[in-house]
Length: 70
Image 1 (cartoon, rainbow, N blue to C red):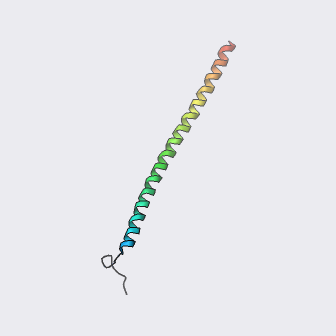
Image 2 (image 1 turned 90 degrees about the vertical axis):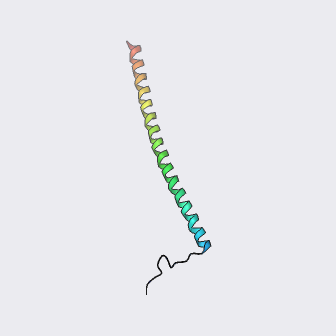
Image 3 (image 1 turned 30 degrees about the horizontal axis):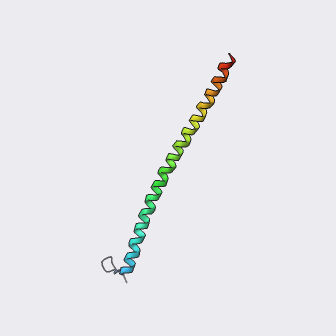
């Protein structure tokens, strides 16, 4: 006994609407995941920039202190 082929399968209107809704939501989820990855990358870049700025400010403070000592 074999199952129905793709061409033999009938889908009700309500089921097709549910399938379409699921597909739209799934596509939106993919978009949101991509947006999240981009935001995480942007956040990491900003955190790296913040760290570099803090290190530069500390170096400048040390240079200023040593300059006043001489």
